[in-house]
Image 1: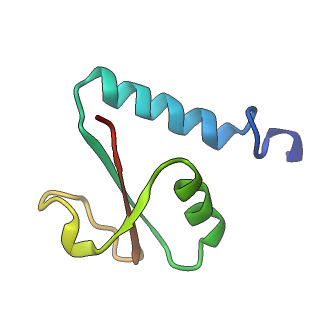
Image 2: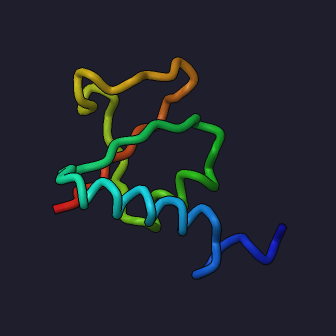
Length: 78
């Protein structure tokens, strides 16, 4: 539904903040994620929320790769 998209009430923003808070409470120092190249809206969302685009070579060795992902992001939590 449109009323739950974007802004302070956006469901994606709330879910991302909940996941970020959990990671901080558990002493994680950064978050990594991957997405598909065609998901431009998702990429804008991640960038608006403090993620920076990185090369796949910068991912941790144990990052769980999805073969469809071509764009990767990192957010420092410290």
